[in-house]
Length: 266
Image (cartoon, rainbow, N blue to C red; front, side, top):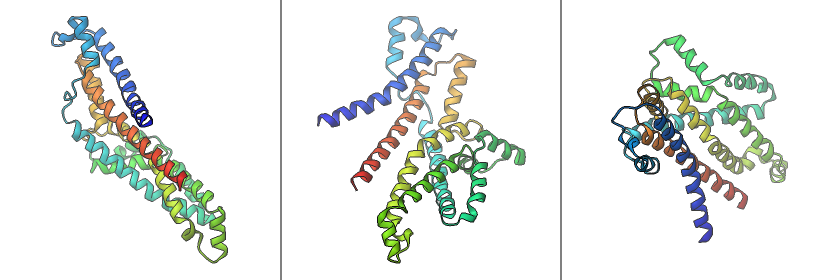
């Protein structure tokens, strides 16, 4: 019971401390810049401290819609990358002749996200549709996502297919893929979940250049611009977006840790 409570407190602190640090930075900037008379909480120290520590959780409009957009692109890119990485890693591991072509493909996937967008913009201008699909493809095919996942899959294949039980099964005429597929599948799922926060971050970045994609990245950028250009109060809005993103990353980390512990037990 004490261990569960300690784990709960630890996860709560890991969630709130970075979120409140960001909140403090935005609060301090808003406090120091010249703002309009509508920001009444700056008139007294008590109101300012209350503003810092007590957020309005309903301040941001369309937050759930933005989450849906970001989540859809992230999961689409992640699943597509798993499929492509599984194919490329299996191909590269099984046939030495294709390792160089696969390596070239993976090298081209190292270009920055913005390069992928500029390439599409050069081809079609502003008429890039459907936005979410191209955004997901850029996340997969740029920024090294495909290369990282494929290399992790190949590493798992090399480790599993050299284990004694797989070698023994192969000596008995059983395919190494049939013998090791169960462990390989679990390890691939674990590696994929481990990389999921990277896909979320890439989605947040790519949303900034697709104007019609009103995901969390676009909403966050709009709030920051409103503070810089118009001196508006956007503390609660930015805090809720940051808190939501950190919560998603923590949930992914907990799932990854749980899966790792299950793998060790098995």
